[in-house]
Image 1: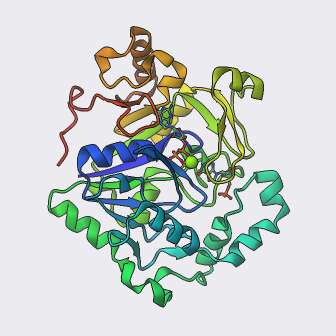
Image 2: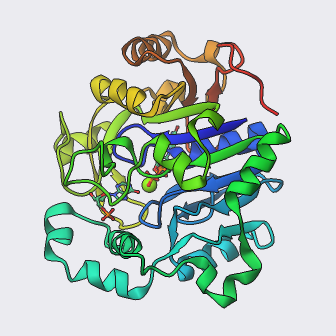
Length: 340
Ligand code: GTP
Ligand code: IMP
Ligand code: MG
């Protein structure tokens, strides 16, 4: 069983928390992180908050093997700190072809006034490293002797687990509208961020994908420049409790109400089979910590029904707090296959 977790808006929808929940619940035997270090996934676990830029959010399950996709890009200093901080040595692997971002890439982006000024890039060197990869001069993990012990063939590992009937999670990064192809170009990241791109990054074809879970937040946030329909003023966002701070850059996230049209289109672009909606507890404080559909206030259930009506796929997971277990999981009652 292979599941892809993908963002439905502009990133930061809470993919980290949903992936952590699925890893614990589904006993995923392997989780593969895609994308690059400009994306920070927040996982709150056992009273600690982790801002993960390399290690898959599924690390919360000690039985899950963790890997980084061949199409992904990492920075080795960030990786070492995270591997130590999460204690995953021995079960964390890079693909031989994972791209390595070096200091020179970060410097090139910092020197680019348009990237920092007009686009509002995170300046983590991702675009510069991607361009070097296109020029076929980027160094990959296999070019670094010291990484030898943690290298593997991720696509072989994934296919082996799938043939054994095990569950594999593919953790996407950013969101559909930051996609280089499908987003609000030029205010986008340097990669495609839709489900097909993540399958390609890992090395699985479309027929191997069982579920695509598109993650939405109960409102929309965006960091950096670019259009945000219905954007609220900072004071209005503050008043509603929608103000957030970006995981990687510490910048304020801009906020707008839930956007049904963007959500509908994200379902289409990702061929989503189901949706997760996080931060429902921020919109409806009475939902905080609730874990059963029947215990959610009627107003909340009506809102979720409305969202489902717009987007055309079931909302199977509802986030009611930052901890992985703060989820209403409707998959069984909605007829989704129980997991391995
Ligand atoms: P990117 O890959 O950078 O797009 O990140 P992401 O999708 O993993 O999201 P990120 O962790 O950056 O931001 C989501 C924020 O919402 C984090 O602070 C989470 O702890 C928080 N969060 C996630 N789900 C819930 C929820 O259901 N309720 C509440 N209150 N907070 C949540
Ligand atoms: P870059 O990909 O770092 O160059 O940034 C380009 C645009 O994508 C900027 O608007 C960033 O704020 C945005 N962006 C990149 N990564 C993330 C992310 O993980 N979450 C939210 N926005 C992001
Ligand atoms: Mg984030």
